[in-house]
Every structure is written in C-alpha cells, then in structure tokens.
Length: 86
Image 1 (cartoon, rainbow, N blue to C red):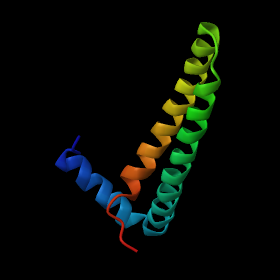
Image 2 (cartoon, rainbow, N blue to C red):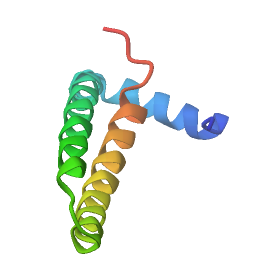
Image 3 (tube, helix red, strand yellow):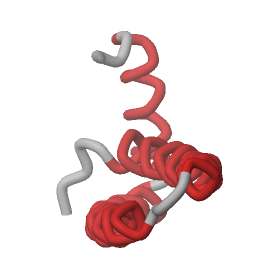
Image 4 (cartoon, rainbow, N blue to C red):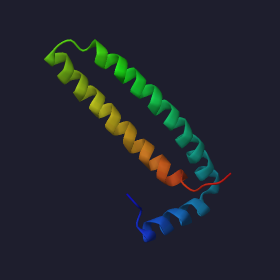
C-alpha cells in the first residue's frame, strides 16, 4: 500500500518541523518491531495451550484486541519515523 503523494509531502513537512521528535519516533519504531516479534512468540506459546473452543474464543478476542491496538500504534510510529536518517 503506497502513501498518496500529498500525504507523503505532509508527513515530510511534519518531520522537518519536528526533527527531534521524529528521531525519537524512529528509534521507538525500531524498538516496537522487536517487541512485536516477542509478542508473536508469546502468542504462539499461548495458542499451544488452548484446549477448548471456549478457550480459543477467549484467546482470539483478547489477542485480537491486543494485536489491533499494537498494530495501530506501530503503524503510526512507522509512518512518522519513515525516511528519517540520523
């Protein structure tokens, strides 16, 4: 999925106006990538423990919310930190 040129220009202007914050967001984005991998490992472990349809439903509901929220934050940080070169 590509970012429309105008939105990309708006993001670049925001980054230029907020260089210090952009640098911090980029570093945080890299850390979020590491955390995402750890989270997925943990979810795989929990899936192996699911032993009933009820437990599976509960797991999907909880994990779904967690992943949805995490992915939203990760996407925002990735987009705002993208292209920043220290």
